[in-house]
Length: 563
Image (tube, rainbow, N blue to C red; front, side):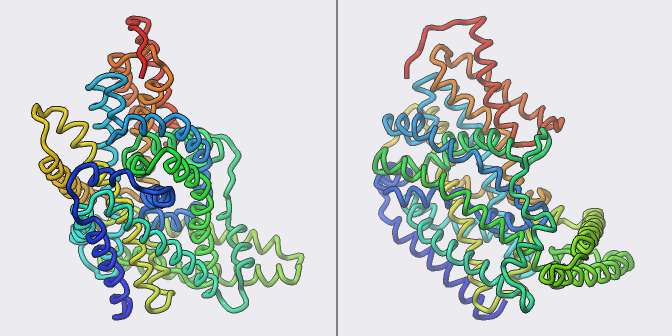
């Protein structure tokens, strides 16, 4: 990067950290540190919810996901709006009425202490691992730009955001997320504009869309039903609904955003607007990836987007790399020529267009097959790096195409997106481990000053844990997919516990506790044997808790319980 890019990157990040420390100063109690004194208006709630979900993984990995697999990933969010409505009707009024610090406090009132602790532990384990993956995403940038060891950049990335998270708590997180998200949206929109502007002369937005469509990257709706297909309209509407219901309704990293709201109305407005805005935002980010494919079908693309990994292959297996490069050069030249010829024939309404499109698709398949062979060779070379280069595609475009200053700002955006989600996750992890585990087993109730100290120590501990997890995230492929798979392993049983709590009043804590354990085992078994795609795990987990709990009633029928 240039000196100007470094200045833009460093100044932006320092400004956010200083602002977070400043706005979060003067914390005196856990009410302020963990819940921001319940003073957040709806627009801060909305931005907090979106910023917590839209991490660096979204902006770094999603364009790469669309580049390799098309835009069908957007179907993953189709169940989101309906889930927001259910949460506003059922979840929010209960959480607000009980004035809880965590979602799992309600479970002790409804069931018993052990069910509360079990559910919180499931959350802590899944969210702790996911947060580690979220730290790894921006670490890729530092590692790539500075040519530093990825383990060092993990420590640096995770350590910086701990400063304002540790000092300022929920208040600092809420206000820095507002600033971060505005910078992120503006910069990503400008990056999309520059992507079109950097197309070869005479090729505009419509032409790029046409090429993306003919290459199969605009596959937004996939109607064919397949249990093992990760992204189609059925898994998105049904599996996505259950995943969104669990994530936004029972995951403390999201619940912690809207329980800071002034009242029910502000909490509901923030959540409902998220349901409306999220799909168009994700569509736009994936569209950047589809347009990137069009861009690299018209201009030379690298043989492998993770340049460090490929350089290692060249150094260890130079003869094999030379063969790959010769084949890549021939295919890339042919692919670029066919792409431009297709657009020319389209403009002239030529009868040869369909034949040329078929040639284009055949070449595309050959390019993909070569990429697969290169990737396999890299993975067999014992180089400690990612299994794929999906997370490097957008990063490569930024580094090699965008103007001076814009590169530093886009790198800053990926950091800011990461910090927004990770800081909220650390705050929620600290709240749960303190309130749902630590203080439950502590005989003496600490005073406000001591409890605040405990909260900060828990935040620090989870920060260190997440950095540790990031050290093992290199073999997870597409990060955006890895996070969602990990969440799906745990969200179903957690959601099932809450659904039983809300809607099945005859079922008690003993039944649901055993049912949750059996359901988690069942979900892991289904995933291990690859029975269905990961989105369906959310449905299976939630349904299993309900079914196992109902079966338990056959053997033990307690008195009805009211919340």
